[in-house]
Image (cartoon, rainbow, N blue to C red):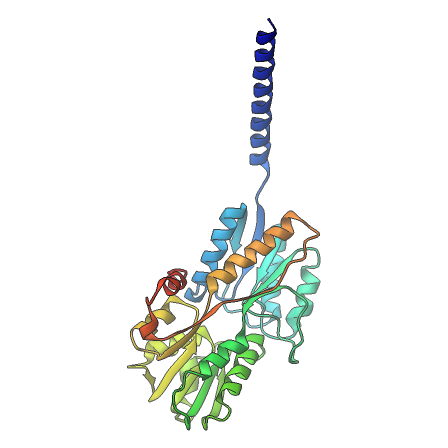
Length: 318
């Protein structure tokens, strides 16, 4: 009799636990996914493929709903504010933002996203002054180091160099240019001109109007892809082409010999880490989002597919 009573209690306990499990599953399914808006300039551009791939992988693992905002070129804070306000009307829970050029972006983000978590990605907000951080958390590569590594690619000194950069009022542009300039000190090579990305301006036409040089150092991924497409045997208008690139096209141009050296950030890592940090903030409101610097690679044609580490890095660009 006692044995039957114990068996009955065990069965009742198991049924109770099963009931709790199914109730939890029902309510868990009714909890809507947190929504995170991602704002990148020219969001359909191939240079974002690796970064977005990392974001999607992290979002899938953390049960977040990503909204990759459909954007054209974002040239200033006003352009970016318009996209942000549209997503605020859609009741998003957080933002991952590539900051617009210009120092006005800081105040715009503080004003419009006062109650919503914001993670910056690829670079910090332009401050107008060196070593002044925006106060927003940011996932980015070391842009100074990328510029420096690019400058180290020149095997011989005494070269005339033309520099093609991104937006002038950009932290990434300023830091990578500083790194490049420091790397060239004492080499006998000289930067004879700079040109910057401008809204509606063709970068190749800008270069064609400049003085002929021995080497083009390109600090902007989009510009590198544009110039590389028109280069032949690693030369554009007689100049060797080296650059910072973050697209599968940049890798292909290196493989085809259109460019001679490439410094590439780990876009997948940037994307993945940004969503990991946002997830922690959404799950625990008191959590302070942390900034990270991500990996970079210096790649030459002979390095492609040279080992497991390089294959993993290149896989993220597919």
